Image (cartoon, rainbow, N blue to C red; front, top):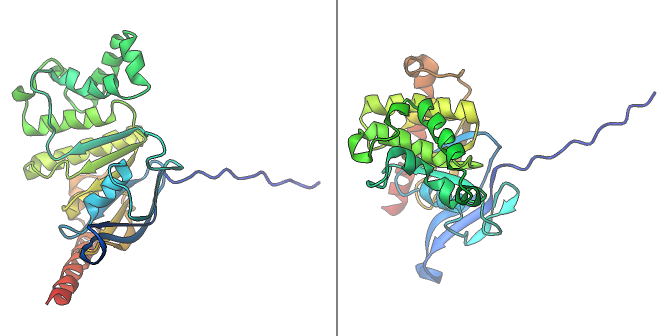
Length: 279
């Protein structure tokens, strides 16, 4: 009896840069911010971008968010070229930027008031359902008792927890994190790594993280891409296969320290190459 092979379904990557390049300016005066770069991020994957300052990490994030069009090449999110249709994306930055006249609950709820399809549902008075969603998220990050507080009543770490909730409340297909923990002290930052890891493991959004902290990248990411100095390009793409949930104690183990040192050497070499070229 013959068995007919079943056709396999192809799942497009959540994020794909295909020979994407970005230049600013015209002709001979143009500044190349990003060389032709290709990058594929699978659905539900957590990828960190590291590299020297000014290497093009934020340029890649702006491409993924649809805030910038490539000079050449293509950027495809969820099978659609960026710009073809608005996609559901969550973003969190170093500064939480909460509206001071709104409670934490209402700040977190803001995307539900402006992002489709939730906007029409919110206008249809489904506030109670959305409030339950917000409260559940706040509980996940230990802020359920602070829902009715105002931003000025919370610490920097608590505000960043609320910021992560706001970035996830509308169930984005892609979560973009640009140095979200960079302004916090070391202990608070490490606590929030655990918070972010728990949120990702529970909800599995596709995440693109920009960070200068190699320890942070190794703790959170399933892949780490290292970029050269400007004009930026990806010079290394490594899988991080440490068991989850990861702990701070793990960051002192030999394999983790070795990964951190390897990433550091790659970035030092990239900086040195640029210095030689500029001499």
